Image (cartoon, rainbow, N blue to C red; front, side, top):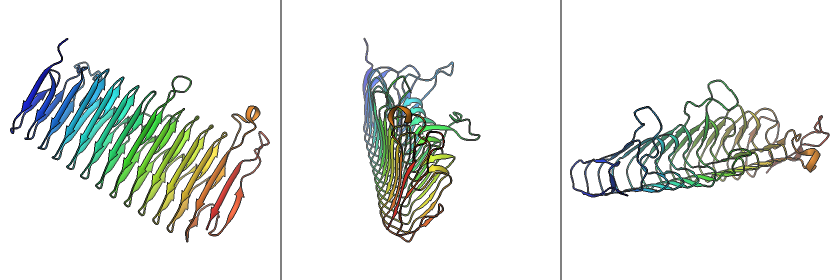
Amino acid sequence: PEIGWLVIGGTGANRYDMTKIAAVFDIAGDDRYEWGSGVVASRLVIDIAGNDSYSGTRAADNAMPLAGPGGAACGVSVIDDYAGNDRYESPHNGLGAAVFGVGMVVDRAGDDTYAGGTWTVGAAFAGVGAVCDLGGSDQYSSEMFSQGCGGPGSAALLLDATGNDRYRADGTTASAYETPTVHASFSQGVGFGYRAGAAGGVGALVDGAGNDRYEAGEFGQGCGYYLSMGILRDDGGNDLYYGNRYAQGTAAHQAFGVLLENGGDDIYWSMTAAGQGAAWDMSVAALVDRAGDDRYQADGLSQGAAAQQAIGMLIDLAGRDDYRAAGASQGAADSNAYHWHTSRCTSLGVLRDTEGPNRFSAGGADGEQRLTGKPDAKDGVNQWGVFITR
């Protein structure tokens, strides 16, 4: 079968129809790469210089495309852009995404913009998807299953080496819990599986440096859902994390989720429930902050909390910190009704802060080590929590 044209582009502003072209090597210029809705075969783009545009489109009947820029469907698709302030757009399966294949975007320099829909910006389902942005202050926006989301049988990565970056994953899909004005996200370092259908994969978002902003809906920012692993790692800067239920180092249904923050005066804000080192249903989750004067704001079952035979931890290793939360939080555990009668196992929630002075809304104090929890009235099992400060 025909694989498409092999093209070498000059220094002008060129337009490439990637429905007909298999590979492009472009020397310079502000170029446009356009993916139609029917691109299936493998694609390769190497662009040396210029402020370039990579765009994917829906079909005439508004159906989702099979693959967009840097997206693969039963093939391999790679974009390697060496310089320029570039823009990447795809409504579905693009921008370092794959379904039964390998999709990758490597951008080596420039202040870039990534605008995606579902299964975009470092996402995969039965494949490997990755975005590696090595320089500049970048903007990432998408809707759902994105920004380092590993679905069943897959591995996905969003890596940003440096710059003051903004990550936003909050589309139009209604809340999984019917919470008004809240949307499902499954983005920003998330492993996702289909319960009783297919175990999830591994998803990671890694940011090297800069003052960054993360915004997501439900299930995000270092979250594992159903037999999967989700990781968010930020290596420095004064960062802001905003999310909803199951955000910021969380996991549910036999999964693992972790948020690792290595420095800076950070703000964590998780709404509704289950955030900031919270685990549910035989899962393990952790939020670890290594340095800085940090602020934590959350609702119930948060800040080192667990329920249904799970382990949840919040560990802060340095700085003057402020913790505010409601309900079973700050080194606490809740109900274990799911599996108590068959496993006789309980849950463990841990809050560990090694430096102060700190403030705790649940009544803890610096220099205190204590067990928290109470008997479960329904099942007669203790709910264990540990609160340790220096």
